Image (cartoon, rainbow, N blue to C red; front, side, top):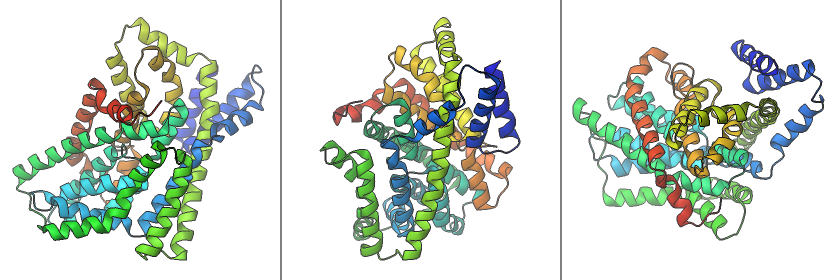
Length: 428
């Protein structure tokens, strides 16, 4: 009865348009009002526990640093550098967008920010080169979906905190998978370029490439600074996030001289809003997940999968499908906050490597953001490009197929995700 009230109230509140975080909080409060085994003050206790973590302090710091980098002109330099590398190939401009999105993601840490920033910088050049807007938006969407694997990533911080696993190990685990899926997307563009006779972008000389590298080098060093700083024991992930904030202010303000006090104020406001939303979401998700756990949902799911004798790879496929589907409805963070605690005991009991599973969860959640018709990423792409959803579906399908292929490769070859944490000797 408790589960029926909790899930029924949550579904109704979401259906009428209430934000996910408040839907979880109100449905939890409703359940606590109907039973007397758990005191009402538990909702306050558990909500505070959901955000009372030193690791989670990295989230607002990464958001602020990414916003500063974007407003400080870093994103534009990364895109321009990417175009100098691949412009000579047929379909070079779309390839440059993919590569630029990967570089941009390593700065912003946010998939939604990637869609917005990359669209603003590349839609017009793509249109001038003759690429239809639906194709361009599909390209940007697919690139943003898998670039979520490139650190620093806010969702990675969240999943690591929920699973009580090293954030740095999860960061490292995403590096090779991002390159693998990126290569698959490059392969698709290459085939499309041959079939549709796509134009080449401008050919750049070696000197121009080196100039682009020099211009973008300060931004490209951010992930390197994070890994070296933590690996050498200089700072924790939260402390490194603070260092990156100072670094971004110095680069954007003193080196590139694109930052103004107004930019910094806007970045602070955006960071405050985003952090508030995430904190409320994590707090209410804690009590929501606690109620699910007290009703034996995690144990029931684990027992069902054990009774069905589903192998480890089958469990990974099922969980990936769960996060793709739920991520397309609830977004990545709510899906993670609800389902990771439910599935965690099963994953541990099967001996599945934790960072491998969390990498699958992150990529599946990223793909879910761009599943029509409800994915927030695909809705944002349509809004930015001012096109209808039905115009985007057909050009997006080949990219989604390639992303899912990459996800399956990672599921069946876990060493792709685990080799980097092992080489860097990162405990988790």
